[in-house]
Image (cartoon, rainbow, N blue to C red; front, side, top):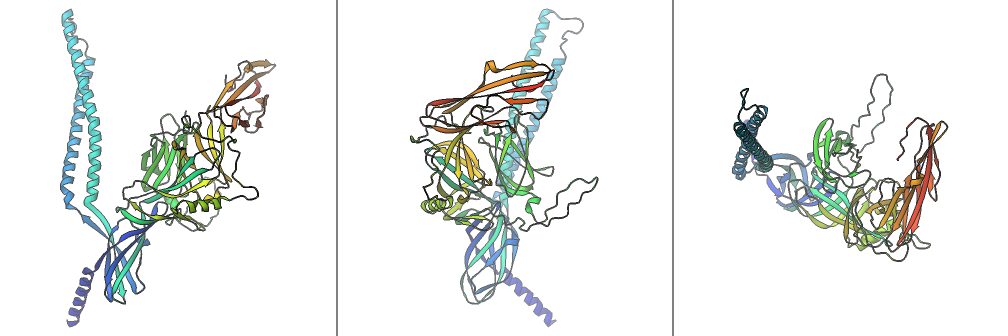
Length: 635
């Protein structure tokens, strides 16, 4: 009996010690951004007496990954054990607000139902009046009686249609108001019950004192992506490449004065190479790819998915395109492209692929991959304008300089390091064996609102060769490109780019850092000061019969006009038909100065056109095919 009392007393003592656990509030000090998540580091100070102590770190985000938690103290404090607890905080102060919103939402739904019933009754009456036009039955009516009944029906129909129109407009307004009320109600409900986590730790303290605790963990709802500003002042000078990070977080707590790092690593993704199983052929069995056990991408993608939707022929952005994300046949997310064709959709549930749709275009399906940060979505149907921009240039021919000194060529790596030293030390850059990491020197503030914040990383002067390019057979527009030679040392990632000529914003392009080429081309948009016109030669369009064959001929002229005061370099590419059928013969009759690719049926001119000058190009071809057959040649 005495021993039992001692055990009860010991249990009560342990319970009291647990109740008396010392609470510690911590503050976010460092955040290492990865793709779709971040490692958050918090610190706090607490006074501890010698001996075994229990402490509790409170007000931690509910989304943190419990398995990734790391807890460290001063070496004189040993962590014996810790565990993660989940608690729910109630906010009764929002109760009345929630009740009021629920009542308002219910009233809106009831009014919407009433309006629908009214419209249904009025439409039945309208159909009845339209179906019963025999006013007088078989006996007939006098002229005045007929006119009186006709006026009555006409007035009643006008009154019904007016009521229906008014009710339909009210229903639309009710839809909007109900959706807004529902959104406010959901927000209040989420705030009334807030789930947070705590870390409870048992410590062994050697010496009484004040100690700093350091807590780190992985947390979703955090993301970043690179964004570039490409600025061109003059076409015979290097372009200025501004590298920025667009960061956002939705962890439920605001961050103030945090040290920030940016990495393209993916900690939660499987890091082991999968074994390659035998590929056995069998009859009657459909092909199935080998399952990737430890690869997170096989389960789907979460986080923010970004990209741009554009016309495949004109490269113009497509606004308000519908974007749906799927896991199997289930829709797990959706979004709409903005006025620039860009989209950013936050996926809380895993998605494997997405579909982009727009009226008048073929829908496009794309698979999601953790290796891809940004998705270019070209749509096939059934850039920026430079016309108002005055680009200054020197008398030297644009595009001639390659910015290398005689006998000594500066690498992009050295230029990048020099630029990094000149840009005020915005960030440090580190290339690890498997990842690229930026360390932002200046502390940052970041609200938990899901809104992207631009964080400057560095600015680099990059040697560039400017060149124009046109495909007049598809579009009579001329595009300007900047080519970056030996660009690998710049340590770039895939991302969007904002384009500027001088201080004028021209729109957006993209940088594809996955290209294996030594030259990186950046599209700078259309230049209306360089014009191109392609038209058929009228007397060269012929159709004649030669025995059992029909011969058709075509010829075209292409006029390129440079209205700028300085010379330009331009590549013009056009096409002539190719035949995959031995009965159809194609012969290029007027290649002119073009370089012809017979396999692809393309003609390419490399031109240098002086300022305020024009150049005329010509080409022609003939086609022979059996008589009595039709062929898809243009008129």
